[in-house]
Every structure is written in C-alpha cells, then in structure tokens.
Image (cartoon, rainbow, N blue to C red):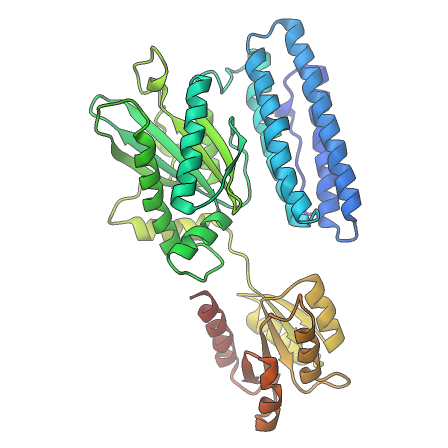
Length: 458
C-alpha cells in the first residue's frame, strides 16, 4: 500500500468512546485505500467496504451526540448540524462519483480523501471543543437566513460565469483537501479599517475545463494563462458578491496571494469564517470561504489576524507572471506523460528508457501482445512502436490498437531502421503520428518526441 491515513496521538481528545471510534474509522479508511489500489479487488468489495465505513461513521455520530447531551455541551446544536451536513449533503454527493465511475481507484481515493480531511479537521476543532480545549470554529457564522441567501448568490454566480449547474456539498466546509487545487486569497479593505478576506479554492480539473475552454487552450494541465484568467474572473466574482454586503464604503484590493494547501490551513485555523461552502460544479469542486467578522451583529473590528508568514508572496502587476509560474512549478503536481516503447530488442528498450526516462514515464514491452496488455492496464500518452518485429510486426500491432475502441485514439509513432515508402503508404489509413529512424542521434530523437508533446499541449 503506497499511502495511508496516519493516526496520531494528537487526534485523541481524551474521551474514550470518541477516541476509540476515531481510530476505528481511520483503520477502515486504510483498508478501503488498499482495496482502491488493488486492481484485482472488485467493485462489490469496495462498495461493501464503503457501506461498512458509513455505518460506523453514523454510529459514531450518534454516540458522540448522546455524549454531548449527557454533559450538557453548549455547542451541541451546532455540532449536530455539522454531523447532519456531512451525512445528508457531503456523503451523498461524493458517493455519486463512485457510482458514476463504477468505484474506480481514483474515485475511491477521492472519496476517502474528502472523508479523511473532514474527519481530521472535525476531530482537531469541533470534537476538541467538546472538552473545552479549543473554541468551535463555527461560533461566528452569520444567521441561517443570510447563509441561505449567500448560497443562492454563489450558486447563481457559478452559473453566470461558468455556465455550471452547481450543487452544495457542505455549508460548513472545514478545509479538507479535495484533489489538486488552486488556493486563491484576496483581502479587500475600506478606509474605515474594515476588511474582507476571501479564499476561493478551485479543483485543478475545474479550471482546465472552464478557463482552458474560454482561452482556447488544449492543454490538459494548468498554465500561466489559465491561472491569470482565473484571477480576473475571481475578482469579477467577488465584486458581484460584495454588492450583497450592506456597505457604502469603497472596497479595494489590499492583498492578493496564491497559497499552498498548508498556508491555507494555517489561515483557516486562525480565523473563524462567516461563510464556508463547498460545491460540486459537475466539472470539479469549488470552495468559497469568507472571513469578515465585522458583519456580525455588534462587532466593530476587522477580526482578521494578520500573519505574514502564513501566506504566499503578494502578487502585484509587475510580478504576476513570475509568481504564477513559480507557484505552478512548486505547488501543482505535474504528472509525467507516459511513453510505451515496443521493441523486440532489449538493447533498444534500455537505450530508449535511458534517453526518455528523465522527462517521461517510460514503460517497456518486447512484443506486440505484451504491448496490448500494457496499454489496457495503463493507457499511455504515446506509443513508440518498432516496425520490424518477428511474429507480430508493427503494422499488425497498430491494426490491433485501432480495432480496440478504448485504445483506438492513442497516438503511435513507428520506430524503423529504414525509410520504406511502401510501408508508409500501407500504414497511412491507420493514422500513425509519424516515423522515427533508429539511427537518428539520441538528442535529435528526444527532440522529436518533445516536439510531439509540445504541439499536443500548445
């Protein structure tokens, strides 16, 4: 098992019935994570495992609520509301992805990541508040009618700006991580000293599908242009949000940052939000967090705790591009493109792996049949296919690839020892991406492959 949700003693709050169930839930999640990483495990096994996790989670919530009532905990109603939000909104929504994908490994990991993030955040804040060791994070929420109005506003704006029909997953988003994301922070201030701190969180695939489409990018990963487009769209989003705050003051941007997840967590831990929502847009997750304590009745101060060490470098007009490039390089994981090299010569296979291994995930196959098996298990981004193989030559392998619906669109480049016009004309109906000669200089061969991927993502 490559990953685990690690239990730490700091998660213990000192109440045996609660601590015991927390450990049990972590144990169940680790078993589910192992199932998700094992391709031989069936959908039924994962489905039953998640059902077992839910049953234990619901049992834990009930027992915790009985305990809170027994000690007369003053935050009981709010705490129960958080439980209800998770079991009635968050769980059903993230279960939809499991059903839609047939309990795929990525969907199982996504489900467990959200659950683990929620459980850890809830344990360290709300459960610890039961013992009086910390103050509940949700003591400064605005009244329910204002919460409801803001949900409607955000949902409408997501539709207006992105044409996305969004569903609220949680109205008490507590900072749990969901996939790869961009954490965008804006602080607005007025002359009277009042401040609004907004943190908008976009799942990476949401921005690739929306901003990438707007700017006409074919890239499958975030780039500087997409993030810049996101910044300006987010500012328009927040300008329209501010129309719903009752103030005559002119609000101006005082600080703008791109945060790591760890920086976001530190800010979120220091400030109690007035709004904190998590949405499923259908294209990816979006979270909306606002810290503006002066909106609370009877509050006059800003209430926002400045901590310059917790935020990323401020973005200005003269450093925006450089800062975004730095952020993407250091904080957004870039998955290497996978190249499958097919050749009956072990010498050629090892030479290609050494040549390409620094920039690509190189998979090797020494026959046409082993190549097909490899492609079914791990879909490559490019196949480099030897034409002159015994038993099943490159032409026959390409025919098999094009005849399989799930593999038919995978790009294939022939590796050949000679230039043969007759072969080229014969293969043209199967639409190979091109031909590369084995006798090319290694750096030229590498450059041709680099150029292929650059053209695909341009």
